[in-house]
Image (cartoon, each protein chain N blue to C red):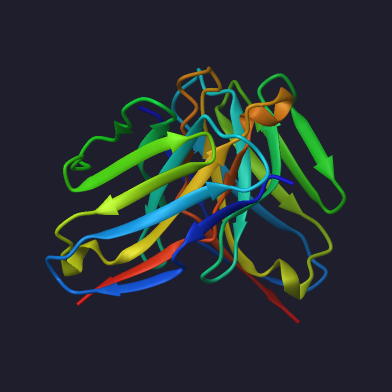
Length: 114
Length: 118
């Protein structure tokens, strides 16, 4: 089955700086890569996703890049703000009706230092 | 749109009893729902995939007789933890997959249920 590794497990950055979180996946058939933000005791919230037919996607301060050859994808947060502090999870799945389960990475605890 | 609710949000039960958790998609139909378990400071681990009108598909290592899943309608899936033990204490989260357009790729998560077994 799919295996997703995520690094780093913890990350502290000064407010205003950029944060980068990286994930690698094992199954070359995976074609959908979402990123979730989870605050303590809350539900995971989808913040951005990318499909395998594109290499990069951006939404305001958040961007995701995908390298299918190397089987890795990254989350980039620019101009970080205190409210960006949370745990971020990457995930991978094969989007094929009847088989869409997500495999999550181990999470990155991001702390923004004011 | 795409709101998923869970009930209850917290439950405390005694060892040996059963607990039912409900997952509802409030404003869309979900033919597929997923049940996850999350231990403190850990990732989400998929327990089972729930399909409306058919049997759930359990992940390896998850006891289907202990974690009963019923997906009786397009908006409701239930997880029943039978004969609960303290080691079943965890945060249980469901998600529902949209089934329209490109949104069919996305999963929308419920707020989770914190189960404590004493």
